[in-house]
Image (cartoon, rainbow, N blue to C red; front, side, top):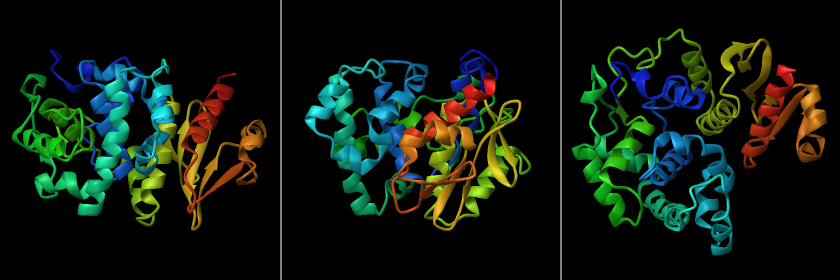
Length: 304
C-alpha cells in the first residue's frame, strides 16, 4: 500500500469500497458474521482479499450464509460437490475447513457462550486503535494475533496463521487500522451509516443480528446503491428508492414493491405479503439468498 491514505487498496472497486467504508475495522458482535469472516480470511491464504471479496456471494450461497450449525452439519457429499463450483476457490483443504471450523466454533460457543465472547476475551473487550498515519505503519501481525492464532489452532481451527488472524481482527473490528485521516475511521453521529446503526441498536438485542444480516446482504447485492433513511426506514437508493427494510414485533419487513412480489410469487408463497411488503418471521431462518436476489432484481428493474 503505497498510497498515503486508506483509499490506496480499494478505490475504484465498488465491492472493495463497500467493504472498506462499512465493514472493515467496524465492530461487529454477531457470531455468524464473525464466522463468515473467519472462513473468508482462511480462503484468502495465498491469494488476494479482493479475489475473495468478489467471490463472497458465491461463498455465502455455498455455505448456508455461514450459519454455524448448518456448516457444522454439512456432509462429505455436499463438500465434494462444492469442489466443482467455479465461484469458489476449489481447494479441498479450504472447502472442508469450513465444516471443521464450524464444529470447532460450536465447542467454543459451548465453552464461552458465544464466538464473540471468545475472540474479544483476547483484548478484554476493548478495540485496539492503531492511530496510524500512513499505510506503511500498519502491521501484518501483532502479539494478540499470534496468541489468538496459537489458541485457535489448539482448538482445531484451520487456516489461522498469525497474519491471517490479524486480518480477521481487522475484519471484525477488534483492531481499527483506518488511518488517522480516513473519513471512515469513525462515523460522525449524523452520517447515514451511523443513523442506520442507531436504528438497529434501538431494536431488541435478539433481532439486531438479523437486521445486520439483512443490511449486509442488500449491501453486497447492490453495492451501487446508496444507503439512506426514508419513511423512517433503512433504504437503498439509486435515482429513487429501490428497497427498504424495517423491524416489527414478530418479523422483519422487506419493502421491494408489488412488482417484485409478483415476480417472486412462487418463492414467497411461504411468507406473508401485503402492499409491496414481505414479512420474514423472527422465529424462522432468514432466506438471505432470496433477499439478495430480490434486491438485485429491484436494482436492475430500476435501471430500465
